[in-house]
Length: 218
Image (cartoon, rainbow, N blue to C red; front, side):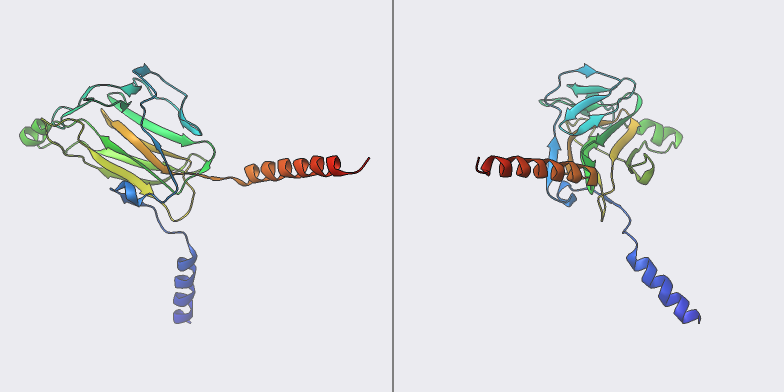
């Protein structure tokens, strides 16, 4: 009996969707993908909401800037030499919502502020960045913490961080941390939701009806 229960439990587990995974390579985001580079903005200070690309909304955050052209990340270097990007506040969040459907994966090239002296002198924990995926009901379906460590004298250095899922269930992705910055947001282009399919089919049906009426002889 115990073996039967174990077998049943394993079979049930095999049918469950795989957990999301933290990915550090943009190539791990399943195609087809869409890229948002924030070059369409130039120093827009906003608390949102703002459309950053067709079907993608930045809900907003205090002190947030879209198209930022400079951020000092202290021991993680400097951002802003030759490119525009999204920047959060002192302890902010950059969240991007996919309005046209659920995505199977999303990520961005990111960094955050770092203060090595606090770690070396006082034993403080290094600052980290949280990457979180939210579902259709605004619930966190996966979250990961990652410490980015780049050259204090570097420019535009960082790390690609994202979340990939076995199924399309990501409504939004968020990057949260002290002095968080993000560029080149990439995500699996959402599949239209059932409601969108129904509207499309209804439209095609109406079009077919009109065409058939025009073809009828007088």
